[in-house]
Length: 344
Image (tube, rainbow, N blue to C red; front, side, top):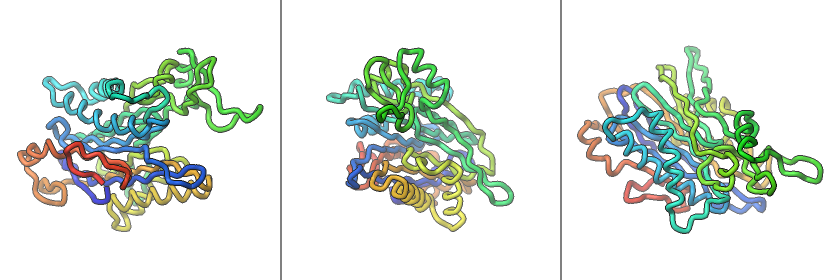
């Protein structure tokens, strides 16, 4: 997605864009991008926007991330459009497991050892609710009166390094251990079956991953919410390829620098991907993870202007409900359109 879109939610204007780039294998060859993203404006006919980033892993990781990317917005739209509608928190808590269950209905998909993270942010009037599975992130950027930006986490990484997450895995019959190189542990702790060295998953919550699910890897998202204030200027959703060597504060400072230089969310997202890939090349030589950054600038809406600055009435927005879901992956790797707008 190389352009910038804008959505109006009450008095807020959210201008957003996404940049994603596939990683490279140990030989330096470009991999198939397993990251996916989606944006659903006017979710369920309501004045809210759903943003999502999904990072697949395993042999079928791309299929898993893209299937969730297709199905989750539809499930959420049905829920928030129902009468009476559940709370956003309740809808998200129900939608994630339902989307996960939809994987079993996809013919030919073997998700025993494949899965995906999921980070979703739902923007309402004056409020942002984030739901997370795995180790993708949502970060809010606050700018103070001196022009300094501060990153505020709206998600928590679900890994075996988190004590409560590890306790659940062990209590369910799993095992936590790093890869072993001789007698020495190598890399981060992972989730294994108690008696068998599979699956070796680095996260404790995910979509798919049916083998890991048998030992406590769950599909229940963790929710965080923020009441938005005038100093809240940015939101970034990202796969872990972005923050493997950058912390969330560094990410937000890069976005803030782009905005201060008059650059758009599209340019800011590209800056993040370039910086992250540079770090990978410096730290890991040929190996680079898939990198996806969704950047949202928050501002005050004036006169109800919609995407591209044109006037958008409620009736016009409603008329666009069948054409406002944008779903994408890496440029050139086959964007998913599903009869909607082309996204990349």
